Length: 354
Image (cartoon, rainbow, N blue to C red; front, side, top):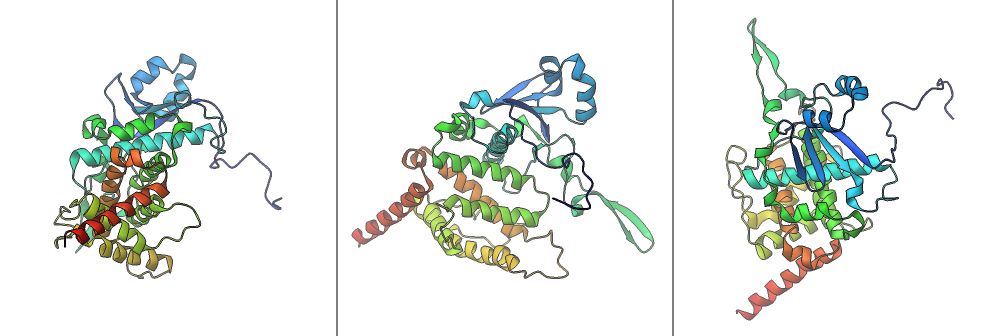
């Protein structure tokens, strides 16, 4: 019981479970053709005109216009499409629907990455009725004064973050779509992990502060390789696994193509283990131990570190959804075992070639 606090309704910003089966969420940052529908996974993205004509009755129209006047795109989540959902989410079906929508948008982000192949190219698709993007304070337009004169510092990053359907192609993520379309109770633990990674990616891309984004990229890597909550994972463990995946199993060059304006010195994927350990020690360990410079704005981080982590996670996710992995792995433990198996085979192959 709280003393001295007047009794009243539940705090307005608190989450309230809603156990219905269909939800329509406003979307900021994604444009759909007028009076059109685009299905991704099991979720329909529709424009405002389609929504009004097919869902909104005259009784609700005035309230609808008050709440969603700045929004032109909506996402329809029908939990009936996902099989038996009863009891899966303790926070209500609205929370479950939001998770599924975030996972689907995470799939869109991966598709954008695969189509554009520019690691510094980002779009932002947000479940919001604001109609505008919130960005870091330093990325907003502001006024600069010098010697009694002033000028406006323009920044159109907010506009550049908006996406259209032409920015991605879901045909480049076929296995992601298959996983998103599966009944919730039919997904194995490995597939659930992929979906949760997509969900965290949604939150990461929509985070306006780069300092928070870089921490979340490392969280995703920890989560991908973690088998259970009691497991002790170190940066050396993650670095080693990444080295096996990208240098032994796949032999991919992912760091060599980073933009020169971000990292003039070419990074080698063969050194991915030491690069990862170095980044972790600075952006995770130092920060968690309170090692913060006074005159460094907290929101700012090294763009090179951020881009490297983003590239690693996106390419790793592309590998995880390949048929080879999906056919072998039903759990994180089997995923880790598969990596070690490939490393053992590689060692034996080199022994026999001597």
